[in-house]
Amino acid sequence: MLQGAETTREAIPHGLAEDDVRRIVREEMERAAKRDLGAGRAAIIASKGTLGKLKVDPVGNPAMPMPVPIPDIVSSLPGMVPLASKLMRARFARHNVATIADLLDAAREVGVRLTACQMTMEVFGYGEGDFVDGVQFGGAAAFMSEARRSHVTLFI
Figure 1 (tube, one colour):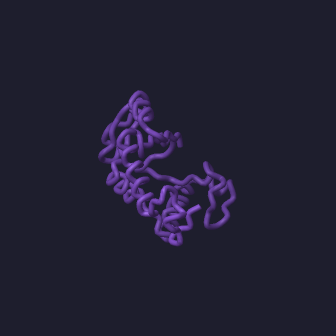
Figure 2 (figure 1 turned 90 degrees about the horizontal axis):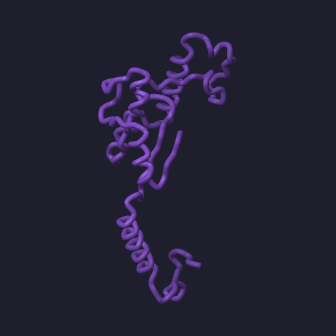
């Protein structure tokens, strides 16, 4: 077994130095990634929520920890969803959690593509102007095509 910095030439099979083994593994991984077009790809369906109207509903998520205990009857009163949303955004900000805008920017920088479901748009009467800039539009067939070429597929 290799022991990090204390590894000697004799501890590595075939008399290779640790740097040589690392280089060979890195080169093999790069060659494999070139052959496998799905490497590093994921297809994710986000089935709930929106990016522009993020709301926290304490009734819809009773396990969500609130800063102060709130009885269910109170959490269902008008105005509680905006209050809970505001409290959660403030808590996230205090703990330096990235904003949705920051996360979207970071995702775009690494090549993430967002696709809105065409059927859902038609059923609920959404138009292209209801979405953040850069969103593509497609149906189930478009998603299946992406999923087929991805190593990871998630339904959230």
